[in-house]
Length: 98
Image 1 (tube, rainbow, N blue to C red):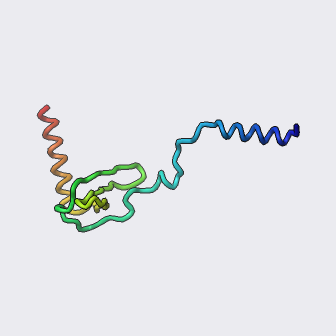
Image 2 (image 1 turned 180 degrees about the vertical axis):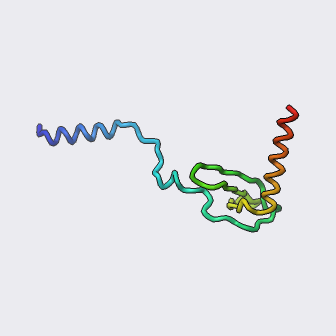
Image 3 (image 1 turned 135 degrees about the vertical axis):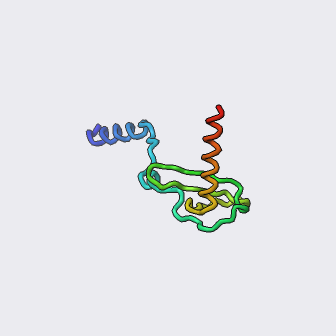
């Protein structure tokens, strides 16, 4: 057989049996979930809040609305800041009682 053909077959075999990479493309790894935020959102519209903290992105707050839509909320909103303070104080009190 031709040496080029054998080399090509060996390379194709190696590629076929190589384990697939689990790494994500850099563009997906560095992308933040929240690219834009809502500055005014009444608390009554919100079903649940989710907080996302990643090394490459600022603190992100995702609100799931009662309509099942998800929006990113500006973490600087006054009621959200108060909510976070109350949650932190509640956690501190529960740790002290243990």
